[in-house]
Image (cartoon, rainbow, N blue to C red):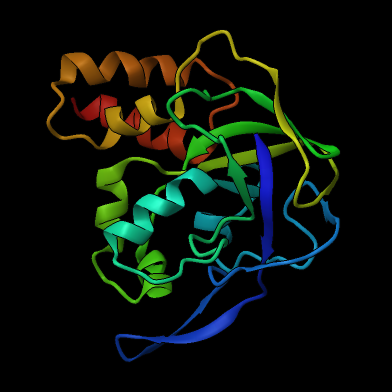
Length: 217
């Protein structure tokens, strides 16, 4: 895996349905090394700390390999890195293979996988399409949120490698589908949700949602 682009953004005010919305989703590639702290990258800021920030969402990674699909799907002439609001655009980042609790060496940093990304309406703002969050969920190639285990610097061209594989081997995509795919029966989904709750690296946000879902089933 290789970092293709490092992307940051300060908050921007945009209009959405007659309201002014502040968002940090409009990320732009930045050259050179960028320092990564426990909560974010230098020059980046999450506006909504509940849904888009905090320790378990300090860094968002998205696969460069997903870009051709979306460029074709949305019939776009160009699709620059950072468009999905990711901090790190990484070739080879595979949600089907990487698992909750895995630790990755990315440049000088060590990152731990905490959860899949769940899109909100701001992804629709980025693409000027209200249906974009729904399409994103349907495709289930969500990108990955990370907690920062070791701070350092990252830059385009840095290698990303699996440093420590979590023994549970619950992939990011399998967890996402177990939660969102309504076509799967409860007997197939619930064991996955129960397994996820046993992984200490799972974010608090997802832990609460999974506990709620299991209590209702």
